[in-house]
Length: 402
Ligand SMILES: *Cc1c(COP(=O)(O)O)cnc(C)c1O
Image (spheres, protein in one colour):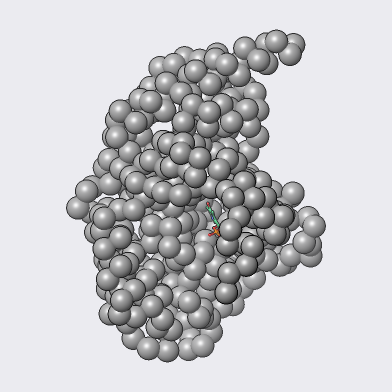
């Protein structure tokens, strides 16, 4: 049955999408229709260099041939297989995630928030304790448990009361953690590098100190690698930069190249949780599982973490080399970079878009760059050129307003 909806113009569809969405989203530009590597095209025929990657999902690039082939093949055979039954791709995925990390077990789910929910529940279940220690400026998702771990008041206050016994202390300050982690603590949950909170890396000393503190008090050390994982920072997982052995590692975003999938990597100290104590209908879905396997293969065969490290250093050097008066600091790890500006980031994102580059913010003054790890050096140079031109233009505008 066709309705008038099937015959709407691009503009009418944009209006329809906005008017029928829950209202929580503010979309930019024409609908996206195609992606290839680090390039995106919209319905108006514009081409972009993508430094958003669907918020850090397309680490292997858009339409990676391995992912396309894996999904296409799987879709012909089986698209539904709940965890009531075995599935061979799920088995391989769990096995490989364990081989490649500190994990001995894996819980598969569908999003970053859900991975954090899992880590929180496993921590409470296994320790029998309630307190979860998190960091100021931390972001862990929007569901009630993950939101309780998140810092930003704007996201939280309208939904209170949230889950009790979540404590927030300043990030990257070990003495502040020492003040609150005790024998009632179930877990310390931290990002290895804070993403939404402004692209702020934690120091190795801080993170190792946090892990040690957890060991001392019998708490679990949980890291949220939903954004920093899957090669983004120059290692498959960012915790590997610092020689950490977290008890719980939360993954999502790039895990299955943007097909919805989350995971909790579960270490030896946590062990197995009891039968029926947690679950997810869609967890370990066959399509998501083969996509994630293809992502892991691409990571290894194309050495995408190594590429992220090399290209990240290049991009960072080029941005610092701009020596632009509007840049306060360039920080990050690998291809997870933040550029802290002296003015608001919104006009910079709009200006970049006009110059064919998609980027996002991380807080009001930080420009966040999360390009696919397959981006080319030439594309990165174009991004740097566009950033320079945009900052020049925005700075001039701001000067006019003074
Ligand atoms: C995006 C993000 C989440 C939430 O992931 P969703 O899939 O949106 O639920 C959690 N933690 C971090 C670090 C993130 O960047």
